[in-house]
Amino acid sequence: METLLFLFPQFNYMAPKEEAYFRMFAVEDLQSPAMKDDSRQKDKERKSRLSLFLTKSGSHENVSPHKKTNTTTSNISPEAALQWSDSFEELLKHTDGVETFSQFLRTEFSEENIEFWLACEEFKTIDSETKRLSKAKYIYTVYIESESPKEVNIDYNTKMVIQKNMEHPTRGCFDAAQMKVFSLMKKDSYPRFLHSDIYMRITRRKGPGATMFRRRSRSCVFNERGEAKTEPSAW
Image 1: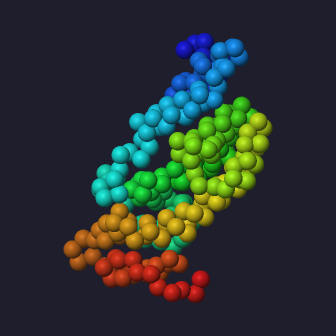
Image 2: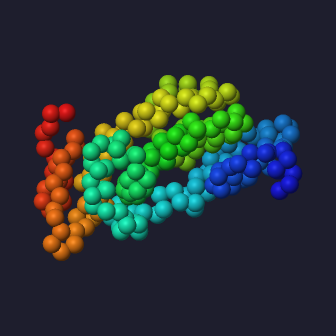
Image 3: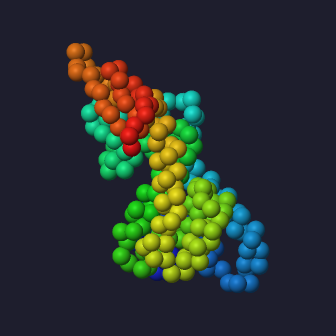
């Protein structure tokens, strides 16, 4: 381990999952060129092992679309949750909103979208060039590269631009892909989330005799029972 820390100082600042991923392949990268003749096959094996590793580390979390998730939503007030219906941007401002939305995406097996978006937000806060390079390679390997374990749905041209930027990644190298994924979640996943069981359970949580809420949003209107109902709007 000391040798790896010396040769790969990235271990000192990586998140646990990233560190484990990097450790899996660091020793192989120390091999001489003569030992890497079968590089394509090794790349396939690496992707397969990385996919298995991420799955065991929490990918999809074995959640069935018909299986209820174990949530921590009991501490979220209906009033706070109703704010998330104002807009997708508003939801992303709230930690509880992001976590609840992530739980919903897991039931649809599309949590890679919010994970990628969050990884990009974190990436843009990195000042160190060395750290930025390491994080960029991690994001590319996990979310962007073809057949990657959590590949997000972006077009070929965007992928190619990112690939070219990997040698010297800038803070904005993932911006185009992040915006595409953001738009996908906003237009597709977010409206379904507002009508989902996990969101309804929070907004319906009222004590005996409590005042019922009616809140208008750009996406829907909540009736007296806390049910989301889509209505035409002027937006």
